[in-house]
Length: 314
Length: 220
Figure 1 (cartoon, each protein chain N blue to C red):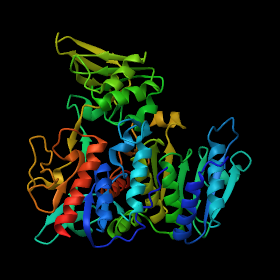
Figure 2 (figure 1 turned 90 degrees about the vertical axis):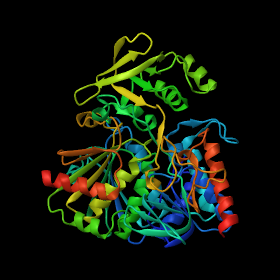
Figure 3 (figure 1 turned 60 degrees about the vertical axis):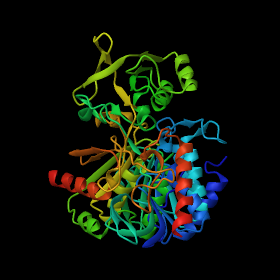
């Protein structure tokens, strides 16, 4: 298991490279930057490895077939650490740009300077934005199957979504819950074939295609989900105690909003060196506008940014 | 067969050598195996920890055979882990249920924090605010071992207890105590309940945690 001995390390006031966020992109960048001889600080607010920790099994990262997400996260962190990367538990609240430095202000008020800043803050799970959702979060509605799955042991649950995360969640929950109903707005899943096939074979996973959640109903506790079929416009109700929402993600780019170019969905726009429109400010991983959001592409983003920074600014 | 791998043991030995200052007492309260599924495992993992470094002094007690001691430390459920400082004073830091999975690192960090009498979280101003609490406060943080956010919520609550002894902070492994979890409507973790009058879900940043704590105090 991971041992995070936070707050015990000596954090300096200046680094060559400071990375906001600690997922695979950040760890990949750290490895390349450290090997180029640069000092690196990673500021991560929860757990190094980021979303990897929430993934039960990963089967598409080369060289690590069928590895637990948390285990891969741990190995990546240890790798970056073994090369001398420093870690700080906290969150970056503000970015300050001047000619020479890219400084950040942390949630504890501390300011840390860097020559190069990389934004690797990733994404948050997207909400459905339907009535009843915000009131029932934590009262039956969850965005983390690995965290909360066991509260629904032998119960009936719903997964909303049709992508890799949704189907992974459904597979995980099908081993705990009595039944899992996947609600997806289209007539077929978006998840990769291998996951789809696994899910279709599980007897306790059911599918409601062409369907969307209209609202959630419950007093202090989720009781029912009202579902609408988008083709027939008919509504129906599901009596379940748990709903796991996995309908995609929204970028955590607020930190640089206003001075860094974002696309219409809030993803940070970069060139092929991962540079934003601000020199010495890079964006790497899921927070960046890109076509494929995978561990392997996140790690690659980090490597590219670090190589570019090392060649141009040091 | 030890519970901790050789590699982790080596890592912990080095970590404890570097970071432990004063000795710390760890009390583990157990019940009969028929009453408590995880008591034996909890005792075993703590025995292994204490054998790694002499500064971690372990006392294992049975709630039914030593009821007075259990009462003295207000043990309500088993397994319970209670940390005492170098003077044998109760820090009011508690774990109910086995600290496994992600929570194992919380226990390690708690041991180091108590040994140094130094919290990991909170700046000076926040420490002063926590110190200003003059009524008894009980923070209960419900967790699952598979929740990556939970250690932060637990450690923050435990740190508050370390700063002010009016604060008692408990980790509660939700799966092991389903009735209590149901009573508080826990279905997403971390779920924090303060003095039964205030609750919030999620791992909050430090300043927000302090605000929530003070809100709860005002409600008392």
